[in-house]
Length: 433
Image 1 (cartoon, rainbow, N blue to C red):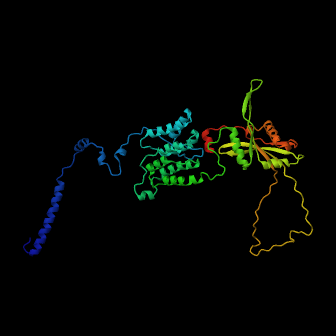
Image 2 (cartoon, one colour):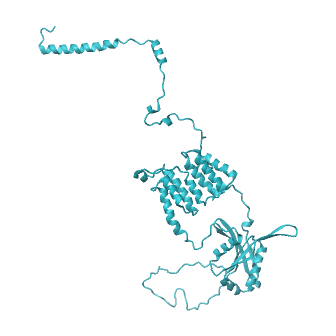
Image 3 (cartoon, rainbow, N blue to C red):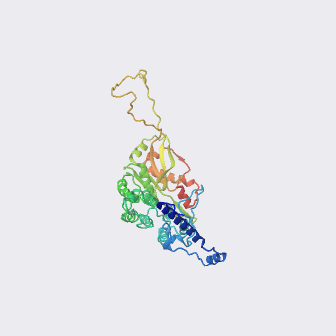
């Protein structure tokens, strides 16, 4: 009853009644929804179907190609393990690829055929880093470790214009470091074998990594230092070495003698002939060297003292080892010097005082004197037997008559010709080197 209420109290009661009626109305409308029967639920879910989202409706972090990737046709690639359990950098598939090529022939053509097969295998060149590491290790087995064209074809395996930095931030943070380190490894192997890169190498590195990259910097350093160190060796060794054993022996003896006045004499050329029993007899080469000073020392030698033929001693010319022999004598006996009683070590007769020098200053060189006799001649033989050495001594007697009067003794040690040959697989031998 609102008859005894003031006007503003009537409006407040009417507002609260409206709010109460609206709340009740909403509750009554919620109760009007009929309950779902079990049969309606089953029939409704039977008509529902789950649809696979379209590629355009995929989330932003997924790709249409990777959302449902078909199974790969390539076999599973696993890294082989060494004896110590360490993982190698190359894959088994690439190793098998080179092993299959080695069964055919170990030539440059076979090596390049393997490179072409890998490039045609996949247009994206997947696994090219592991393949290049494996190809670098196999170069010595195929005999192409000194071929510049093969190194250029190995660099051609890298995808082009993929690893080029697009801005200065990528150049600053070493864009694609794994690929750049692989290219630097190729250039370092070229440096170890003394191979000068050419314009084609520069073009390939520019297409692969760009001008501002670490491989390009390594290429520039090779071009800077190689010409400066090319002729720094005063005794250069030719590359490749001569195949003639006489020319190789002359080269080795000239490097040991280190005297322009030395004269190289060929006492016997290598040849073969048939003996009386139709057996082939091979005569080794005998090459000797002697200087005028050595000939003069041998002329002043006492004929009552013997001379000795010693050897063999090894000499390495790149990867080829040759053996040489020397003709020498024992050092002469030192003559005793008499010292007068007035001369004493602690109280010398003369004393030189230099106020600018301290007592600890010593300007003299500390030279260790070894008791070795003079060397009269050197030689290199095809075989280190005494018969060949006797022929060398007979040839020296023609220009050194004193040698025919002095006794000659042989001090021959077992050389490389008497050692047993160790047969190893080429791959294991290369890993040991």
